[in-house]
Length: 303
Ligand code: TA6
Image (cartoon, rainbow, N blue to C red):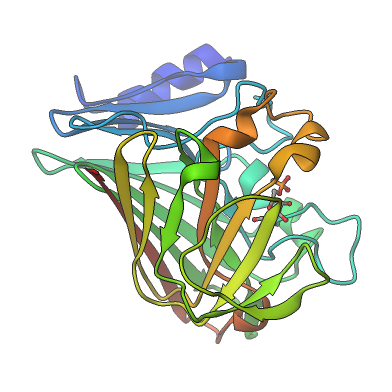
């Protein structure tokens, strides 16, 4: 069945007339487009990748690179990539894909729900020959995204095997900002972090976070909400979370950005990644049959 037919078939099965529609997106990759009174949004089946959320009262909240690749072997640059079952490079396996394998994998849709204001899109992926190449565990990963006046991201892992498993996970959210050199991230004052730009040296955050050089940090033991203050866009974004013990903050700054083929010139200034996660020493152990749910809730308001 050709792509076109597949998209039509997916829309027949999972679309909701005038609310949620499966269409062909960039690179011919299927996506679901949500439009309600409360918000609009987009999500690709490729990597179960949210690429847009725009509450009716605000401008686009997520950053997507103008140079992103749109094919089934690369991750989309921007939006919300899902890192799983490892974060960054896989320990002891330099050939393994960075940030795991689900962000460049086709996911499958589950029924779409509409409660009159918000729309919940669900997708899943499971262990198969392609995953076993890199990771022996048996698993089912379900991702529920609710597009409404707030954006709710729920990543639910079930260990479907007979052995315990250990995994890392991150919702690698690219927030669109007016000027990254003027933003503040509030809520991590006094927390320990691992500095990936300084051989993972452990440091203590002093005050709010500002960005004035390459920043790549894993904040430890963080469970509470954070705030992103963006004076250029006159916007405050609140990120709350559940079952997540780490927060990654990333901006490549000038030099790293220039070396990234899939990031447009100067676009490093329009993004900041604030990642709800369980990584590094706070990876999660899961027994056979057990489930783990990580949740992030994003809200925006004027400054
Ligand atoms: O989340 C921060 C980080 O791990 C950085 O080290 C940087 O590599 C970034 O992710 C992007 O990774 P990617 O594999 O998408 O190029």
